[in-house]
Length: 289
Image (cartoon, rainbow, N blue to C red; front, side, top):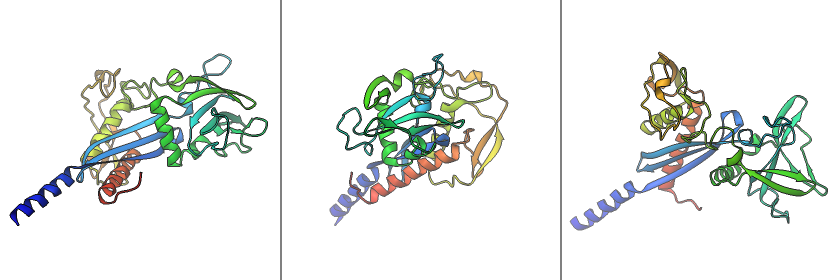
């Protein structure tokens, strides 16, 4: 019996130590970006967590205005999409979604650009089947994140039904890196009054890892002094000495100050928590993959 108990205990310990990872995909930052929240657990403890936030077309489409400094009506990008144009014979079209920068009635959006018998057409409604709406499907969002990571998002030009592939996103990205959380990115830089995107991201992930079961809908805002330790693995270009604010408006959860100041903190913390719940479920039930 003693030997059996030891074996059972060993199995239980092994199970508790076995890592489970889950990822949640979501439309981020008011719709212009694709978020990717990944959490790995051992037992019920968070072993690691991360947020990636991939630039949408606005962040990487090649400038096509007359002066070459802006995106103008008619810019087109191509995105791998397992749900798009599956019946097309042309390998440059099959399995891809195309988005065109669509300016109409003083409004602008990235609209689905669809091949037909005689050529590609824009949607009849300005916001009909736009990038933000279509990326609400996690199958598309996961494919987009994978393509951003693997650099298979490309600028294209189209003449009738002929697709000509141009520069990849990595060569035309506007903020230094497709992932806004990458240390080499330049989006929302640290300055005298702001800790910037990447140190905000670090604070969000660190607070979540220590508090994975917190109620992130019950947040508050507090004035607090933020002290940063410079870390080039977080932000390769920032010098924390440049941040000189006496204090800042910081998010707090259950009176615990998080260190995060940006308005997306509650949203991203909830996405991390959703991934945490999925990882817990993976430890209980084996899902087909």
